[in-house]
Image 1 (cartoon, rainbow, N blue to C red):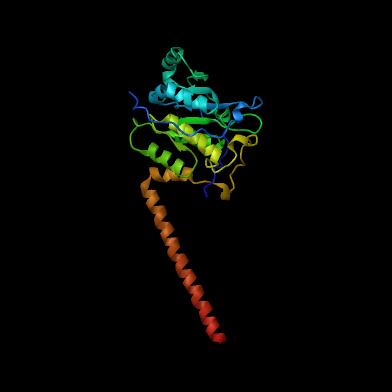
Image 2 (cartoon, rainbow, N blue to C red):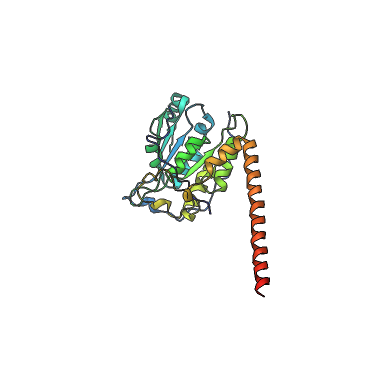
Length: 276
C-alpha cells in the first residue's frame, strides 16, 4: 500500500510571490456526514491556488459558478480562500457581482509567502475543524507541500502549458490515492469525489482525515522506510534516459539475484547428496 508522502517541513512553505466546457451532471448520493453541524467544530474550508508564475483564469471562472458554490455548501464548506495571482483585480470584480454565493464566504488575495497557514486550514483536526479541500494547479512544489500537511487535494493540470507533464503528475497522484485528478469543467465532481474518499477512508490512505491530531513537522531526514517516491517519479519522468538507465540497473540486479539463488540451491543440493 502506498504511504502518504513524509517530507521535511520548509519554514514558511512555498512563496507564491476561454469558455468552460458544458456543465457535467454532478448529482451524487448525499454523504452520511453531518458532523459539520456541530457548532464546536469549524466547517470545511476550500483553498484554491493557481501558483505564482502563470495565471489560470479557467479555474477562477469555474469556482464562482452557482453549480460549484452549491457543491461546496452541500458538503459543509463555509469559506473559500482564493490565491488569484495576476487575476486578483479581475476576480474581485467577479465576486462583487455575484448575486448568490450560496453561503460561501469568498476571500481572494493575489500572492502569499505563507502557503502553510492556508493549507493547514484545510487539514482536518479532531475537535477543531473538518477536512476541507485544496484545489491546486499541478505544480510539483505546491502538490508536495499540500501532501506534507495531510490535506485533501484536487490537482488541476493547466492545458495551456507545453507538454503533458502536469496531466501525468495528476494521474500519478490519483493512482496512488494522494489526490483527486480535477478536470476543468468538472471541479464540482472532483470536490464531491474528494469528500466521498474522505468518508470512505480512501484518500491519502488514511481513514480519519476529519479527526487528525495537530500537525507536527516530520523528522528530517525522513526515515528511509517512510519515504515515498513521488519526487523521484517526477525527476525520472522529466529525464527519460535516466528512467531507462534505472530500469536497466534494476533488471541487472534481478539477474544477479537469480544467479545467486541458483548457486545457493545447487550448493545445498550438493551438500545433501554428500550426506546421503
